[in-house]
Amino acid sequence: MTTAYVADTGVFVRCGGPDNDKFQRLRGAVRRAGVTLTVPRRVYEELGGDPIAEEYPSGDIPYSTGFEEGWIAVADELDYANPVVSTAMDDARRAIANETGRDEDSIEKADTALVGLAAQLLDEGGAESVVLLTTDKPAGRAAERLLPERGFDGQIEYRYAGESYLENVTAAEFQ
Image (cartoon, rainbow, N blue to C red; front, side, top):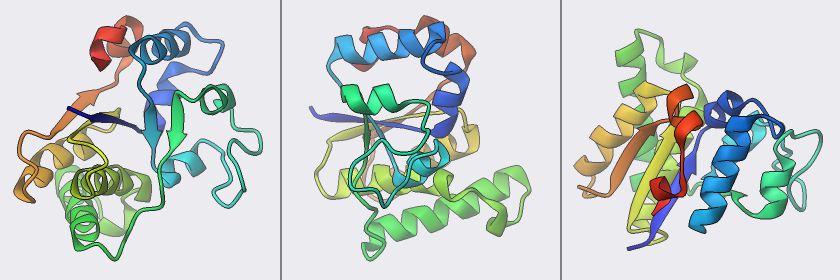
């Protein structure tokens, strides 16, 4: 079974940067497992990357080694014309807004892009399952609730990438 690992900005922010033990632990776990953490373009932008650059990384992105080493990759552009993707993103925005009591217009586009990317990977056959690593609990819960409603039952898993997770992560988490 092909599993895609989708990561949010908060995962890297919580790691603290390439010299931090949590970053090195995540790096080692992902590399030993032989998988890649995929980030939506919106997340790449939040990390400081230039989405229109010919090749990534660009600018002063602090996680450039992850991209250069290949254990972090930028996903293809989201296909907003695909109703599975666009509906999942719209529904995720509403679900996050409802859970947090915020206006839908204030919901981060990167949060909905996580759900959209998971939907796209599953719908287009890029993965048989998706593990979403995020520090955004409402986005994670939205993904786990909404994607099964679109026919992806048992194919999405949300993992809260908090301090404890990052301090103890091993390759077994990715196998």
